[in-house]
Image 1 (cartoon, rainbow, N blue to C red):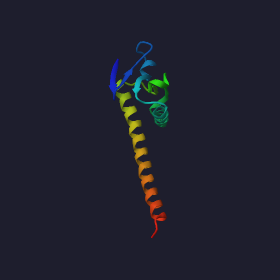
Image 2: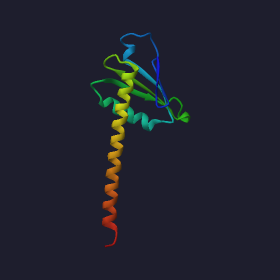
Image 3: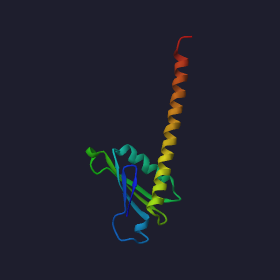
Length: 118
């Protein structure tokens, strides 16, 4: 069973479908990404304690710039539901980055205002 998520393949691996395997999703791969996105995404997924039981990632080959994400949900889910969980975490990360960017811009304006000769 496969579906596509932004040049990534979501592939359930392992045992035949059972209650346990429907809770485990192995996203193979996020190409062009490394530990930076992997760690942030793992942390954000773990914040969703109502849905996510475990989230982890690995970068099998550091030279390949690719991560594999493993997700265990508290309830069985379809690939489409897993896609929603991942996209929700990615949206939260994007909102945090946008907030950081705004705060940086405000700090730079304040710094420039305070340091420029009057």
